[in-house]
Image (cartoon, rainbow, N blue to C red; front, side, top):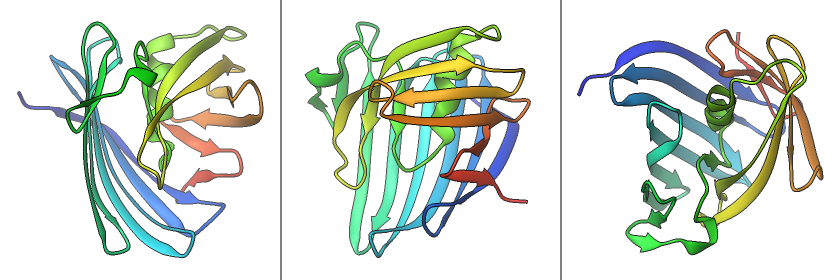
Length: 187
């Protein structure tokens, strides 16, 4: 099944050295988010390519992450089924059962998924638990999140019961343009 290019963006990381390229594609089977993050984490050079395949409702179905953290090769495959069961390289992940969205800790790209799925009116909020792929641990954990739509292009993102908060401004396609204090569109 071929995918049609919709849009792309390049972000600059603000809290450390790094960039991330993300492209949004669409097919009859659903949207696909692809990207490549190049950054320095705790003094270690990292290159991570990612692909997130979604169902037509923007729920995550399959994720691949490949690349390097220094000399360490990374090859991860995440899959979820209709019952919300997740597998990481074939191993069941019961701690994130029922999660609908993936949150890749090393990129702002996956914020797109709940925003597009939620289709919130201004002033409305969406609460969810995302399957959070932590970095550099590369383990999955549930991450409670809340998205509140502030304007046509603005959202407030909160996680860990409000312990972390940031404002996001979006492109017309819903990709984060600016992620307060962490990322901004490279221009």
